[in-house]
Length: 146
Image (cartoon, rainbow, N blue to C red; front, top):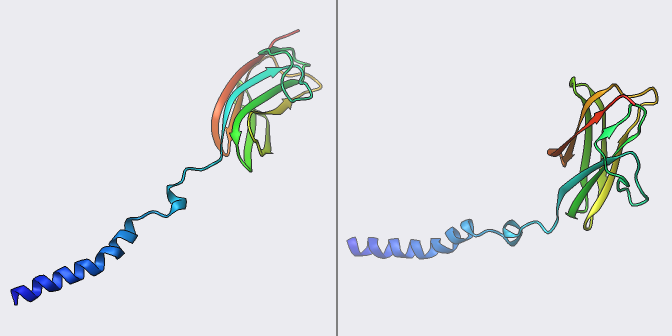
């Protein structure tokens, strides 16, 4: 009886090995790293942008009547990514939130801006940049009396 049990156990083990191996083997798509990835590599602010959406003269201090531009630089590639810019005044009040869907294929510049015809209050402002819902960079600017 002991001999038959050992052979029976060996036969079951041999039959079960392919099943066990298939449970732990990952499919090719599970082991591949994504071919596309995007990262925010910088934020530039200024009073104007060029035709390439890049800030033409970088600065962090503005007057109340300025249009404030931000260029968000990304690197990498993706068929679709969402950039969001949230501008907040020093008291915590959100001044503006804008989203842009991008499909970068290398280094890309995306423009955001805020304007207030009657003038921004003097103080510090924070620009938070989000990529696909995750905050990735922050930049602080200041509006001073002219």
